[in-house]
Length: 339
Image (cartoon, rainbow, N blue to C red):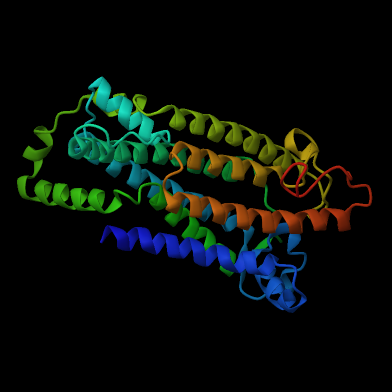
């Protein structure tokens, strides 16, 4: 059953990546397909006339993505954390810890001594690693929800295609699940059993629960250096994305015309046209790094993010070039010095 969940997520990410990659190929016969994919992805100022597109929704519906992300990620985080606390305590022997840390950091000596016991410990670290990744995702979801509520000021005419809206809802459901897919079914079964036990025992079950808050946090501090470098990369991207979102949010000041646009400046806007997309790529690269780079599902999640944002950034860059004659010539679309 676990393979079914992991397999489904991987197929879903591949199904999202392939159309974008195919539409990006430089073949004239794919021109109509490229326009279809681009039509689905257009939004806001890029969708210049909403009357050209059927089945659109207001761009302010972006808030729905982050509400879903916060609720779903919080549920997964709490459930996985409780599961890890009650069923996957970490063994603190130096020899075992050094081997598991080495494995999570990309080492290969995990199969040295007492193989069966080490594999059990490896699984425990994977569970706590899922908690760590979900914590990062929770930070991302909460920040985006707050920014969408207090930083952005969407134009009343800004629209996006209904397909893009549904894709966003899917993404913020599948992305947190992909970060804990290796233990998600165990977590759901654990939650089901705990709920059944609570129903049977009632309030007495609550009184019997004892928590040691240090035991909730301490295992996260035992994760390998890959996790902390990944978290640093994640936070670096988050800080720059917040700065770029603040710059974009300040462009439509009170009293400006609804359809008036200006060239953004500051932070990573000095090198690329869509630095908030670049920062998003950095954020998810941090998640890949923090995962240890051994999970194909998380790599496919990252590939979907890159493919989707590069496509959107390229169209945004072309829009800027068409809109402004004095647009800075040194700026590229999204990847500094490359694209």
